[in-house]
Image 1 (tube, helix red, strand yellow):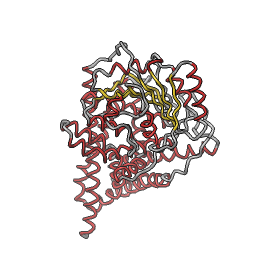
Image 2 (cartoon, rainbow, N blue to C red):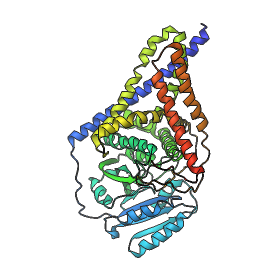
Image 3 (cartoon, rainbow, N blue to C red):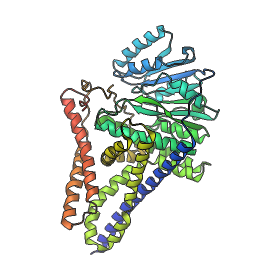
Image 4 (cartoon, one colour):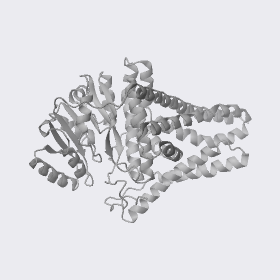
Length: 505
């Protein structure tokens, strides 16, 4: 065998091992957060918020862009806050270009007559998109505290009563609450998203916060001390995740955050594949852009070493998707090379440690499912039913998210694309009439090709060489990419039939 062939083999295997090593280290980080979370749960009982003894003035910001299906629901929820109306104002930051503006104008007029301090704010341009609108409103915000909600959220009436007491000292700059889900059981796609977010809003957010690590404002459902926002430099729009960016700027300035796991704000999950991909792409790319902006500052900060390590994984979380995509794609040619180069067998045994990464992910979600009580059904049964499918789905979405990471790390800019909202709930069984046809998903042919690549390629090599060590893994990958294709086709059929959202089963 030629030396050139051996060099190619060594290069491919080195890349493969590097990707698996990152997944292993990321899994170790997840277990560390599980440990911190469980420590916190043993140490601290559920906190019953103390009633407010005085009422600081609060500005409620509602950034809106073409949200005709959900904006009335949001304004009604905020108008129903159990908080003296003389002590809070509402800014509807409206960048809409459709009938949403007329709906807002009617609701604002209605609530003004009822004594609510509510303002309909329009800009001459959408410069900076959501971040630009928030910064525009912040300039005239009168509140000592500022809270904001995306259009698909329905904050409870006692939201301010439960969050404001958590500002226990002057150095706490932000209080974040947990998201719950209005339509978790609408379809399998919303089910997977809820499973992911529940783990984030339990293990990750509480684990980081209880240990004193950097955590992030989640873009909505939180309250800021206005002085903290100003000190951090306000809202910037040089990343797609303005929330992640301002979180790191504030914490690098020395501000502390607080997380309230027991206070939740219901929100709508994207019920179609295109909307879910759009949201994931923006989140992952924005995180990578924030890493470019703040990673060096984190490493230079006076934070303890373990906090810096966790922050690096936090900022570079998108590398998980690149590692999954690269390692899985290379696994098939390396399976062939394994049969040609027997010396590689020992390295393949070493690479089998990657199964530990899957075990770490399983423990991470198991603890989230069993110990948080978010589900109303049997928690262990729910985990065992959901995790295998969720794991395969996560593999399938890796292409979409890996491309987002690459663009973010390379500094390739793109516009802020909002996640469509549909005003659907678990109880709703009919679709919504289509109002805007989606662009053709250009990733679909690649995802179809990867479905075949792992399914046919993996099976062919396994049976030809009688080596089934990676056969289950390749079938999981094929099924995962197949699920992404299925959800995409399902959405396209719904659109052609005149619906934007598939009928829920």
